[in-house]
Image (cartoon, rainbow, N blue to C red):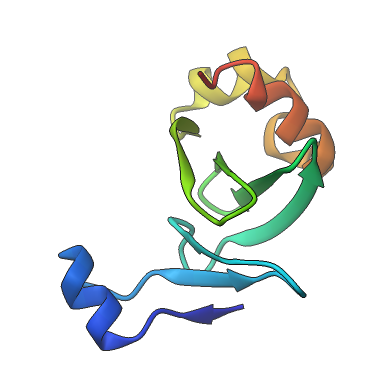
Length: 110
């Protein structure tokens, strides 16, 4: 896990550097997770599923990337309001395991 370079940040028009996940033998994924978020990555069917969770602020998100590290056009979902999280994930919300969160959130992508 690292951060994008200043040149990458500038080229993307971001005010703050994005976090990056480096996949062994694979692409670098530039993700939207914050520094305080826990991040888990799962690979399935030639895609990378990146789950970010912030337990303190009770939000979560899912980003989906192709094998080349490009985010799918409609490959992300972000839930932050209490009702959004509980409606999508159930009463346990962000306390579910990351794989379960990924599976539940993938229903809202695409």
